[in-house]
Amino acid sequence: MANVEPLIQRTSRREKTDWSGSLIIASLAGAFGSSFLYGYNLSVVNAPTVYIKRFYNESWERRYGRVIDEGTITLLWSITVSIFSIGGLVGAIITTPIVKFFGRKHTLLINNVFAVVAALLMALCQLAGSFEMLLLGRIVMGIDAGVSLSALPIYLSEISPKEIRGSLGQVTAIFICIGVFTAQVLGLPEIFGNESRWPYLFGVIVVPSLIQVGILPFLPESPHYLLLEKNDKSGAEKAFRTFFGKDDVSHELEESEAQRDVKLESVLQLLRNRSVRWQIITVIITMACYQLCGLNAIWYYTNSIFSEAGISHKLIPYVTLSTSTVEILSAVSSGLAVERLGRRPLLIGGFGLMVVFFAILTVSLTFQNHAYWLPYLSIFCILAIIASFCIGPGVQFETSRAKISTQE
Image (cartoon, rainbow, N blue to C red):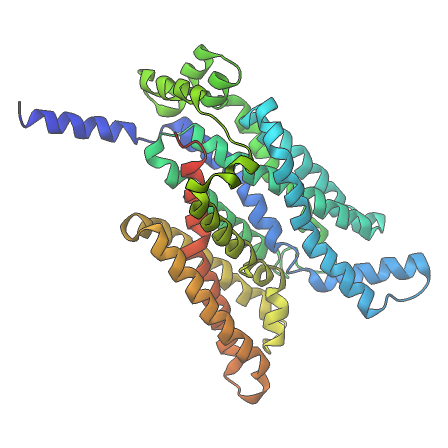
């Protein structure tokens, strides 16, 4: 009997961490229609930069009878790039009341309306001769990204056993990388990266959205939402059974019920609470570093950086593919190493390496005309910056967010 008990315990533990078919489908469908689109739209404007600027110039000349000046076109392009983030801020702000009223799953489904509208606006802008449609589409797509990146971790964390919530967060991060890679592949000159077909790059956005709309309705809502917000115990029990792949979910129901007694504090109350002051400072500093580390600038302006580094324009689209390849490999390897090394060393190491390689990149771009090998050093630095981000901050923030979204 002494040998049987540990075996039973190990078997029980293994059953708790099994991935049910419904959980796998939910995580893939959710990530494909949400985080994939975020990564895709981070990188999609990079390849057709020249053609979009030319479209702006042609639209301006047709409307006002004169060529647009360099300063104005630079301003328009800067707005095109940055307005996506502004839309993301709006989306993140409106997510809380939406997920509370409609639920997690239905929020993701409703959010696809933003994606489809944005895709139509951006794909038809050239046909309509309106650059304003592209700008409007970018901000609407940003709203979609802000909602999805806020609602998806909540949904995935609430439908998964807590032992594998970090792994689901890794799925989200990896799909962001895959989205970036897909945008770069479709942006090759042989596919959509040319003057006649660049609007199709934005029209492709509807495909992941339609796939998500076709799959999520057949999956249950978050059991936590059903139990705590809708008081639907039978529905929550059924959802737990579906996602956890087992019949006895009484323990999960008890844990969820216990959250009714959790007292929520406002932001002001949290800031006044001295017992968590250092935690708040730590979160603010790390999140500020995460948002301001400069990686988005790499994605938005990779082609421009490679061009400044002296790379041939014909080779730039193919060299750019190496950046997303490095990102995917780094994200996967980071997910495998996090449990062994811990998150803190990876965060510190990732940010530290980014500082070093950004400094070297700045020097190499400044003096690139003084030595033939400096452009190659610039390419190496860009790849190293991406790898450093993915090994440290990139995946670690996603897995940590998934783990604490519904922390008991």
